[in-house]
Length: 348
Ligand SMILES: NC(=O)c1ccc[n+]([C@@H]2O[C@H](COP(=O)([O-])OP(=O)(O)OC[C@H]3O[C@@H](n4cnc5c(N)ncnc54)[C@H](OP(=O)(O)O)[C@@H]3O)[C@@H](O)[C@H]2O)c1
Image (cartoon, rainbow, N blue to C red):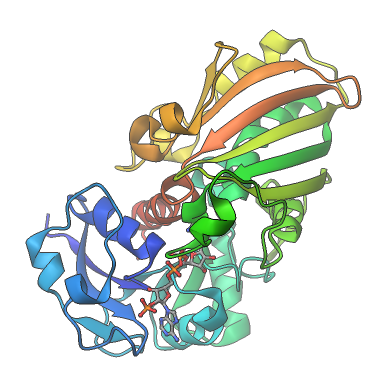
């Protein structure tokens, strides 16, 4: 089977680099076009990007020329890791021109007709693409994945819906790679914790899970009723966002039932055996000192969410810790999994 050509918007950034690394040997997709700002356009990729990954940059990609972020020569399927300050206009221009934009940027996530997808949880929300095309008059479309901390939280919460999930409190400990490159100044982050992340991070963590966990009803999503309270912090960790989470569950299940719900949780990506699907999207570890970013963020290529430390909570019902790789499961890997599902649904 010949591979489907794809483009990457924001190819030079942290998320863009992760796209290139994850797509290097992808069985279905082949990177054929790179786009970034005017600062990078016209340069060879190796000169435009400050490569920050331990995976080596393939020579043929290093030599590819970076283009300005305008539709025209790009393939139909375009992944986006664009800075949110420019994503609104550029992604809309691509969708208008007939491209399928699979985006990491926050700009369109909460629009009524834009799928905010985690394929294990809400693959059916892809049906929003048709009302989106009607509403916007686009021949293409925009499909988004959640904020990098939200993916970890939503994955951990999805199997708990069956127990009457009503409330959730989360404090995140987010890696510096989540701030892009060069990101947070070393002077600010070394030996330190910053108790605030800009760009409305806490608002996203409070709002996005309700849409993701919600039900498709007609041409819109009916939000899940869970109320989330979030504090988001930046910590001196390279990769892996951790969340310290407490939940209220109306049915007061036994701890074993919760662990079973996490361990047996599977979705469409596992059923369809999509190339980027982890065999077990959620892994629960019994050890009291896990999960840890240094040991657990890369589980199954960075696509698995690792959970641990389940115990009773004297304020809500239970508390636990969850962790996921922010630029893989929380960004590029998530978008690639979205595109794989769209391909299997005949939407590309
Ligand atoms: N890092 C994460 O963990 C993470 C997780 C989930 C979602 N996201 C989201 O993904 C997006 C990218 O994040 P990142 O961490 O990769 O950021 P980043 O490292 O700062 O990269 C930003 C990218 O946007 C491009 N860009 C900036 N201004 C542009 C313009 N005027 N026209 C065209 N391209 C422009 C940059 O190109 P130049 O190099 O040419 O400037 C670069 O390729 C953001 O929207 C972010 O919120 C990030």
